[in-house]
Length: 243
Image (cartoon, rainbow, N blue to C red; front, side):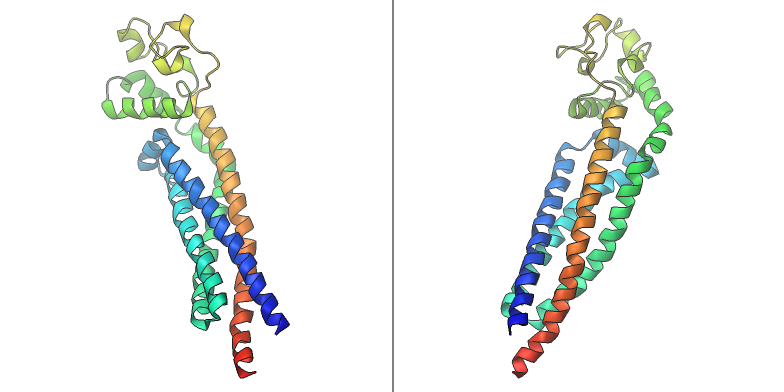
């Protein structure tokens, strides 16, 4: 009986960790969704490697929501001493365990090769700033949203606009996102403290990728423990009922 009580306490503990871990992933996913870069969203639709970046935030939301449900389900099954709920908990968490393991590995691997992938879009990004900015509405909207959200200027820096179509047609002006004040400016008004969007994205993706991957791998350990304890508890319920 003491062992049975201990198992119930353990499954409460593990499911509480899973619950709050899911809450954390859900929060991260929602933050990435709200503050996500339009530049990354655009690349996700046009450049296949960057599709992973768009998928990451949705994975966080989906997996976080499922973990919240699992945490509640596991605790409820233990309280009710319901074998069906415990078995359902085990099956679902086993499936999620496999999916999260693959996702965490992808995120960690991707964060390490992000620099390589960025080099392949260098010419495309600078080309859009030189030829399409302020000409094509979708490209202009994408870059404006990206520079506003990331507080950056150009792909590498403000010089990406030098000699561009926008620069020439406005008499040597740079977009307001590159300037010290909230209005287009000449080169003397450039805010040199602003980094290029490439550097901002690289730092953001590395930090977020490693953090999300680390949280995911950490939760995997507790999920394994919860699966083991739930199965022991599943069989112990029969023993208690026979007693």
